Amino acid sequence: MRTTVSLMLLAMLFNACSPGQNAASNSTPDRLPNIVILFADDLGYGDLSSYGHPYIRTPELDFLAQHGQRWTDFYVAAPVCSPSRAALLTGRLPVRTGLYGQNIGVFFPDEPGGFPDSELSLAEALKERGYVSGIFGKWHLGDAPHAWPTQHGFDAWLGVPYSNDMDWAGDPDFDAMRALGLGSAADQAERSQILATRPGKYANPLPEYFNTPLISSVAGGDSQVEQPTDQATLTRRYTEAAIEFMENNVDSPFLVYLPYTMPHTPLFRSTEFEGHSLFGRYGDVIEEIDWSVGEIRRALENLDVADNTLIVFTSDNGPWLTMYEEGGSAGLLRMGKGSTFEGGMRVPAYFYWPGRIQPGIVSEIGSTLDLFATTMNLAGLDNVTGIDGFDLSETLFDGAQSPRNEMPYYRRGVLYAYRVGQWKLHYLLEGAYGQPPERTILATPELYNLRRDPSEKFNVAAQNPDVVAEIEAAVARHREGLEIAPPAFDARLAIRGIQ
Ligand code: MG
Image (tube, rainbow, N blue to C red; front, side):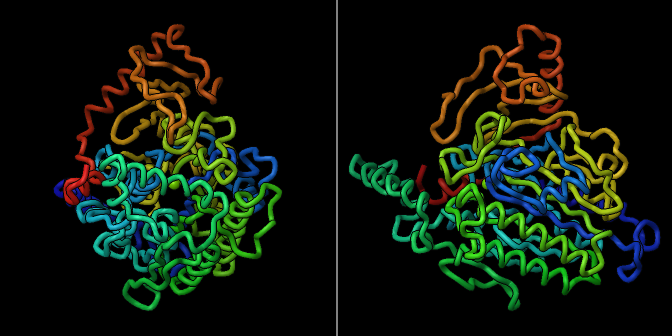
């Protein structure tokens, strides 16, 4: 892995355009473009106005849709937080980087590992071209200081190291809860009793239930500046910090990565947004994120760099359906977060760059995996190897067909399904968070025509044996080029002596 990445880095350096070729110096108008990635957490496919939600009003995202591109078939590489984020930041499938778990789906607090030095992050890659990078939001790729984003290419960070519900005040920590689950009947009863208190706390979240820390590098060097984090202010503070960072770095090309903590439960919003939405607290939270999107766009305009900045807005995975009214909706897509049905991995996505993007609706396949390769092209770093993404530039700027025609659906390191064109073949069916269907390894894979049946209701494998064969061949090619790395998230079990 180390060798691959080093070679990749060398290849990228070797192929970098010299100043004056594609890229001018920072002071000239045709300097390298800025990249702004706005990344919601657990936002569903059906949660925004322009994706059909009747009550949540998102005029700023509608603006991006109207003046940019809205993608209908855009995917993340994993249906949960940590592997999805790792894929966005590396352009590599979690099974290739090892940033996934078979037993543990995401990183939890007190994680001994985290984002490895052997992986090249988007921020590290861009540094070679003089970019400065800031992250304003949830990292979720390891909470140990060696794993923090400022150790992996980012110059600034304000945010939380993991999900906002991973540090329950007064409850045993992750390892202790896991040990209770494997312990005596009394231990297991104690664990069940603790878990039984949580739905009520999610439904009526109070700040004192959670002990999430806030990390800031603003004062120089990372330090914990708050615990518990005042979660109601997070969307606003991330936005303000991102804008301040852009103002301070307007003379350099910059990457702003803004992974919102919301709408991952528990839901918090600032007082200005309480009661803002017809859709209750979840709607308030989304409408505050929409406000944030507008603030970022206007800040770029005020800094006179909007016409040299790509804004991408998307989500890390589908909605957390077992949160009931506190969770979002995948609209007409089946299931949500945690599953490899469309609702788990197909997410809203907008691309905006005034004067460059061909406005419209794109119904071809794209993925967060592709943001790395796309950004490399924009930064003048070509011939990137060892990644799983495609450069979407020609689709974004010239209206060309998307270079991606296939999408693998992995869950915990296992390939559950595979899409080619409009067709999706399922090898395993499984709901998430206790929802049906139960895990079923299909003796005969099921085929769905997503264009005609986006809700994945009608298995048409028997009628289309040629399509099944075509996808089977694509899967064989996919597996051929893939060396599966061991699951890094599970390593803590052995280290801590728990299973
Ligand atoms: Mg998430």
